[in-house]
Length: 216
Image (cartoon, rainbow, N blue to C red):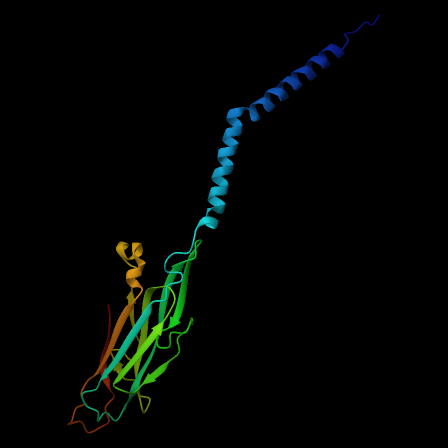
């Protein structure tokens, strides 16, 4: 006969309590309501992560808008000895959705070729017209221009000796964003006016002028 308490019943009781607790926890985690909650969480997660697979490109993705631009140089006095021409470059940006994200494409304003950096062109005529075709809806048109002189002297254009920047934004209003087809075909007119020379001047004059762009 043992003269001390037998610990086995107490250990068995603790084991039984642990098993009952584990069983309660398992019953909780695998109850019908909790499983339904898990299912809802999984549905929400996969909907958030993989919904884009079900989306299709928007109407601008394969659109081929025509972008027409006419450049006119108005020189009221062709006796400008220093006037070499108008140096111009520009970028047209279009926007489209591929079903997952917005796609912005950049094109050369005068050639219509895809590019991120527009090439410079020297226009020395009086009327120059360019027709370009590009994919996507027109988002913005940016034109940079400066008057070039024969001697290299800096001419004033829009009261500045630096390159003039003209920009027109489209898809800016809520109506345009909801109806991007309205910006699929745009026509811009750029007009340069060279100021007359001073017939009384005794020295060579540096050309001055103004340039503007209107898009419709």
